[in-house]
Image 1 (cartoon, rainbow, N blue to C red):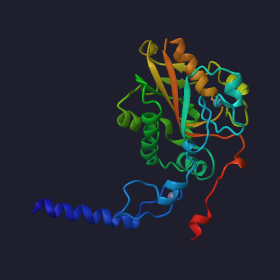
Image 2: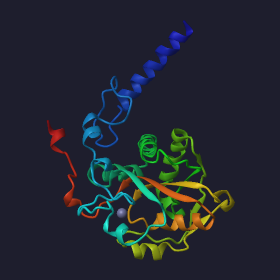
Image 3: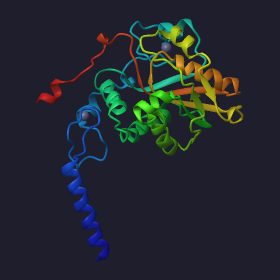
Length: 265
Ligand SMILES: [Zn+2]
Ligand SMILES: [Zn+2]
């Protein structure tokens, strides 16, 4: 009887919370049908978001390939060898995905981390199924950015990925020095120069002979991942792979970036 009363109380609280804060799709902010939904995504987004798997992407860095070639590599990966093995991304960084990630970071929607971690973990299970990772390591964020934003979004995602994937997460193993300037508008080489020597490592002995999974939110040129890989390899890492939530594209006019009409019906 007591249990029933408690259950009733819990249900009423949930109902009140749902009325005050109805669960919304984290991508389009449309209110979800609470009886049907367990995940924070609506049916339209589930079907139409720009998933990388729907495009022909570079097999090393996951950028969509516009001019196809027999190697399935982008222009940059064709010419230059990356020091990390591969990056996989869940989405292209366009349209609603770009808006959602910006909202997540700027409006501190920390609870998005759980679903992002789930999607990224599913990609790891599917695409890296034959790889035994020893550790998850995150791309570090500068202290200034952390203070400005109030949370480390990649750390939040990695906490849940550790649970989904059962891979030990080495918290804050990599650190960024304080005086790191914004990378906006810089190309791969300018970024590499600006990143050089800016990343430090904690517990270097743990890395020796280990296979590392680097977690990042948005993979842009890969310069930061290259710098993280460099220091991990200096500590004896065997292989370094990356998983990111989204991959920037070179020219978004080639991509269907929105599906506004679907919502107007
Ligand atoms: Zn939606
Ligand atoms: Zn590439």
